[in-house]
Image (cartoon, rainbow, N blue to C red; front, side):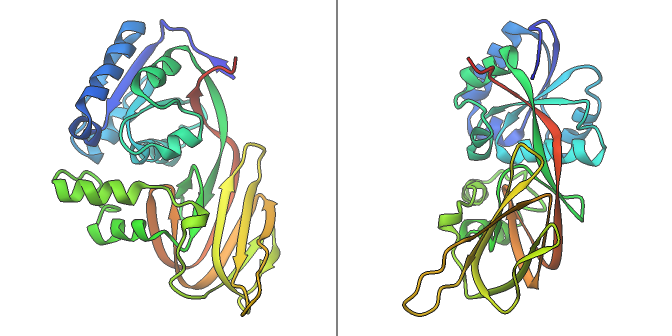
Length: 282
């Protein structure tokens, strides 16, 4: 893990949803960061300004103050510009942050800001699909019901929501889907292949599929077959570098966003593809 000197320069990008939803936490985080390092603060008003600020960071280390969506947005932009390798990203969670916390980011603006100043870069695996989309946490098929609200509200195409109603929908949509909570609208027939080997085929209905990148170049795959009457079906487990799912117009939830419908999608693990600043183990 690469450590950072507190004298390095930070580019602090404050997501507008964080400013509107919890201005006090934003202020606290900004004060802690400014007290410990030289900071340049950016207040983007939309996705274009967010992307422009990140692209013009120069030698400054980028710090995103925002929720899980803001974190995913930053990683996606860096990936698409092929700049993940040389960029150590940091995040101070404000808003829904289950994904960030699952990756090891401390909860609370003070603890998270101190981790930015005193922590170290950890290289993490990334799932990249064949449309250049990324997954930091867990991929779920089918998506959770809360994520369906995301589609209905148009959050996927316009995440910068400002009205109280849209903010509520956005908060619900961002809750990460735990596999235990994934509701199946009906039997789903999918073919799931891991490194070219079939885990389940179209003849076997399934309740859910989850794919989670690890930290060793492989993804953990869990398939839950639909049990027969009066019987229980054990989950099918596999691990590999590539995961292909084929089915009839299925949707999937990747981190905070629902995508699809698609009939085929392949995800590939990129080992150590991105760096996140985390507390130093001690």
